Length: 104
Length: 231
Image (cartoon, rainbow over all chains, first blue to last red; front, side, top):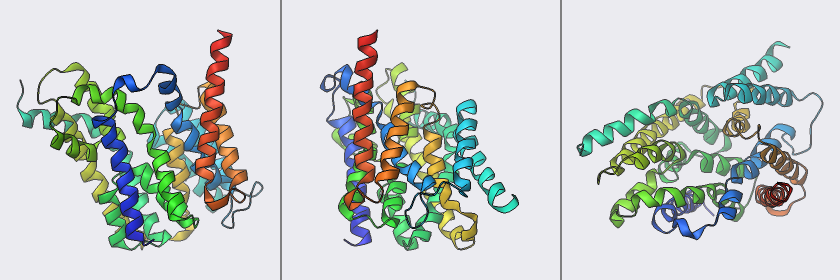
């Protein structure tokens, strides 16, 4: 598939979820149980992007020792939990990462 | 009733604070897309056509990992499934709209616009209240397109040594900061992350994001039930 086709399909599926939200889905369609489970979607899917990007090296093998990303991500998580700020989380993570690779 | 323009401007005003984190997000996206091998035109096209931060970053991440188109598209769908939840809430306020407006508003219905306008829609009875959502969405649109463009230009000037790709997991981590405090969410996060990490090389077709997501939801369902029975 060409890059453009890929982009268009991804755009289409993104658009369709949004459209179905306001045009098709009605309140009665979901009971409390399903709604509760759906509220866990971010917690269930985002770690699949977060964890491999932190714990795996470029070749895809698990890298624990000598991996500044782990400590930087931990610092970012703690800052995030206490500050509840998206921006503080991103910048504290990047700053500690740069500190660890350039200064330490 | 306020004029359409007033409601539109109120939408712009209300959503503005939420735009602060979108700026670095857009920049990072622009830089990374070029880094991963998309042309400047394709990168801009992605922001124009998809117009969704999480969708676009997932696309990049899996594309750079060599995932198949089918897996990339279904993973983007999985990431977007969180929107279905909002549907039940927001559709109530927009049910009287003409279809053409529903088609237009759907394009702008990103997390930030939704979050801010839902408050306004709940409190207001005016016929033209949806202009608030259009104003908020248009603001997000302008910020997202211009920061993508800036990222494309800056991309060439930013050295690879900076490891800016680390900003991807950080951005998603930032979206979960409120969830780390909750017990069930915490367990789901750890399990999904572990499945993705250990399964990265073993789950076929690079479908690790989908497998990890489904495992996480299954665990959430079981835990919800367990907490209920203990109450």
